[in-house]
Every structure is written in C-alpha cells, then in structure tokens.
Amino acid sequence: MQRKSFQTMQCPIARSLERVGEWWSILILRDAMLGLTRFDEFQKSLDIAPNILTRRLGALVESGLLERRRYSERPVRYEYVLTGRGRDFRPVLWSLLQWGNKHFAPEGPSVVIVDRATGGWADPVLVDSASGKRMTFPDFQSAATPAASSRMRKRYAFSARSGAPLIASGSGEEAVQPKGGEML
Amino acid sequence: MQRKSFQTMQCPIARSLERVGEWWSILILRDAMLGLTRFDEFQKSLDIAPNILTRRLGALVESGLLERRRYSERPVRYEYVLTGRGRDFRPVLWSLLQWGNKHFAPEGPSVVIVDRATGGWADPVLVDSASGKRMTFPDFQSAATPAASSRMRKRYAFSARSGAPLIASGSGEEAVQPKGGEML
Image 1 (cartoon, helix red, strand yellow):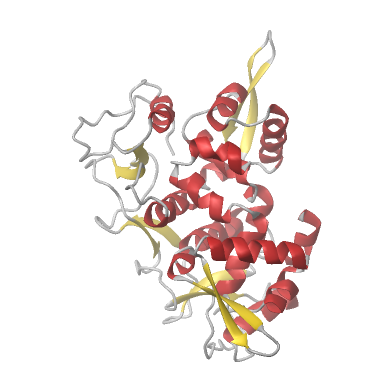
Image 2 (spheres, rainbow over the protein chains, first blue to last red):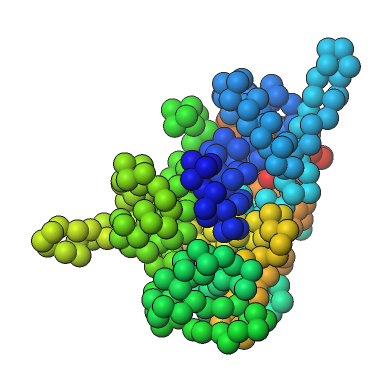
C-alpha cells in the first residue's frame, strides 16, 4: 500500500497519511497529547500487542512526530515525547473528535473540547486566519498550484468537470473556476 | 485490531477511525469530495486493487459516509455519492491537508485551499464558533464528560497528572483543573 501510494505522494493528504494513516498511529498521537510517554503507558491505554506498538512508535519517531528520550539508565528505558510536528497534529485530532461526536455519539459526547477560561464546551470550526471567514464548501475549495504534478492537476481538472483545473491564484495563470462537481 | 479497539470505542476519535482509520478510506473520501463517483474513477485515481476498493467502498457505505446509487440499468452500474455524514468529514481532510503542507511539502504546497471570492490561499485554523476564539492548546483542552466511562475518565485523569480528571462544565460536578501534563 505504501508503494501504491507513491504515485499520489504529492497530495498533502496522502503524504500526511503516509505518517499517520495507520489506525494505531493516530491513537498513539492522541495518547501522547494526553501526556502518555512510556511504552507500558501506551500499551495499557491501547491494549496493543508489544511488537505492533514498537513498530508504530518507531515509525512515528522516524517521521519526526515523536522524539525518543532515555529516562532511565538502569534499566535503560525510553520515553516518547511529541515534537512540534507531532503537536501540530492536534487540529486534525480535534476535527476527528468533533466529527465523531456529531455522528457517532448517539448517547451524547463522552469527550468534548473545553474553553478553560469559561469551562464551556467549544464548537470547533475551520476559519481562514487571514480573513476570519468560516471555511465552508463551496466558498472554499482545494486547488492545484503550479507546483502540482500533471497527475495532481488531472485530479483537480476532473473535479471541476469543466476539464479545467481551478488553479490557485498567484500561479501566474488565470484562475479557472470549475463549472460544477464537488471539490475537496 | 477492530476487536482490540472495542475497549476504547467510547472515544470519539477511535469511533471515527473505526469508519475511516484505514489509509484507502480517507483517500476514497478525498476523491469523492473531488467529484469522483464511479468504481473505475476511484480505481484509476488510487491505483488500488479492485477487491480492496470493493471492500473499502462497501465499508464506507455501511458506515453511512457514501450512498450507493444505480446509474445504469444494463449493464447494471452503481456510483458512490457522499452523504451528509461523509461531507462533514471535509474539515478533517482540510486539517490533514494543512498539516501536510506545513510539514511534508519542502518544495512548496501542490494543493491549497482557496477562497473562491478572492482567489487567495486560505490558512485554516480551528476557532470556537461560540466565542470566535482561536482554539489552541492549552487554552482549549479535551475533557471527559459525565457520559464518559471509567476507562475514559482514567485516561483524562492520567492526562491531568493530578489524578483528577478535567470534567466538562455542565456536568453537575465541580470542574477540576489539571495540574499539568498535556491534554489532547
């Protein structure tokens, strides 16, 4: 599957999934953000086979999401701490949490995001930090940039149905608006 | 793995991953949001084995993210269209896109989210729709609610390090602030 993904690797979503697209990896990041750092802590929380946990932790370290630190000399013990790149994954987790609460919590949410200043439950939405606009489709759409490969451009061309990709501004090419079809 | 996940199933992130935690599923949703609907379209875009694609599409239909519609009588052909639940996944994909662009696009982003009103590149951030506050850690943190199982509460209690879980307000219990440790 990793090999298959090679062709679509320019897609930022596919690249992200290369690092965290595995079920356990995302739950390990969740637990790391909850303060877990030690192998036995992750194992207890996730009820995961040691060999799988070892592999997933190793992959997250290799991808630069976790840093491996020795916390004991004898016996030699390591802990796994989030890097900046790992901490930057939090909005993805919060978006997953929000989606799960909306669609898969018929009994009501068991976990919510709280504004610690007020104690109130937060309702996370995506906003463009530049304009402050709420980012909803179709007012906001993903678009290929000039850096995109022909394969990537084809995907966006397809999405436009008009056969013309929506090229992001600043590309030096005239932006072509899609004539329909749903974009990401 | 699905069986293992049962114990943590109350976690909204785990529940979401039950539906989309598989690498291909998320890329299928990406392509569906780009307007792809037909088996051969997904297969061509993803370069995925037919039997795997069949399985993943079936799982997404079963989870209520895609709807299977007959678009041809003879030969009998079906297309797969996003449901409301599936469309609600877009913020997760956009958060993944943002994270990928920041950390895994050394050559510059090949895909960006565009404000179609201005053509400008958007910078998605999570905001609390209630207060308009930017949702950053540690001002915002996830917390167990009274609906949380003891296992869930333990996880949040751990994250607080103080041994006391941060209980979301409105729970009828006094909110206990964590004394440290990183929360999700």
